[in-house]
Each structure stands twice: as structure tokens, then as C-alpha cells.
Length: 154
Image 1 (cartoon, rainbow, N blue to C red):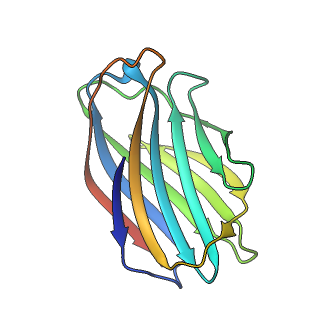
Image 2 (image 1 turned 135 degrees about the vertical axis):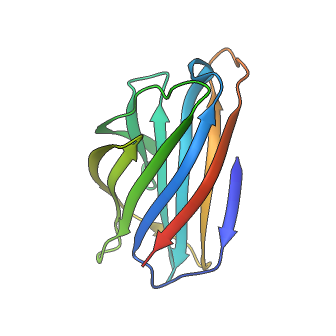
Image 3 (image 1 turned 120 degrees about the vertical axis):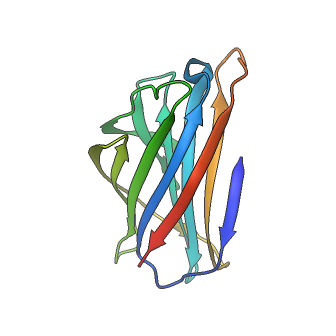
């Protein structure tokens, strides 16, 4: 897992997570996971996403309370091998405290997600981004690179 802690931005409620990724053998991946996490005001907002490549090819969102992945209606096609892919996520922290997964754009194709999940309790304060590669059942090796990672928030 690649992880980058950022300064605390406790008042931010909208997030635009933008990055490029390159995968040499997407057939070897179970899933590609991308995260933005914010802890503030006694709550943890986990914007966990997963491109489910070995399953239903859906973008799945992390359910913090149920501790499980929930498939959205947004499809996640297998990314092209050995080429850069551009990915943008739109998230927001809602007034009632829910985590809202608004939309995902992969290589210019924007799909609405519109799923909300509850937050969990957390006494820390901070903001971070992360990426994790999940191997398939046979553990076939593959490599992923991420580049031009940015998080805009307001």
C-alpha cells in the first residue's frame, strides 16, 4: 500500500482526487484500490474505492460500518495494459456526517456513483491519500505505478 499523510484540513467537505496510474498486467489484479481519508471532529470519513477487476467490473465503495465492499452502478472496465490511465474521484462529506461517493471518471468517461456511507468514530485529525494493489487468487505478479497524484479540497 502506498500512503501519503497530508496536513489536517478539518473544514474541507468536498474532495477531488486526481491521479494517473499504469499497470503492466491488469489481468493479474483482483482489484485496484484508491483512498482518501479524513479524520476531524471525532469522526473518520473513509472514501475507500475499488475497481473490482476479477469480479463484476464495478466500482465498489467501502462501507465503514458493515466492513464490506458495496458495488455501485458505475462500471470499471479493465484498464489498458502498459499505458497511463487517468482517474478522477469526486467525494463529499455531507452535513449529516455521511460519506458521499459522487462520481468517478476513468480516461474521460464520467460515471455517477451517488452512494453514501456512514462515518466512524475517530479522535485523530488528518487527511491522507492511498493506493493499494490486490493480487488475484493465484498471486500472479504485476506492477502498478501512480503519478501526478493530487487532492483538491474545499
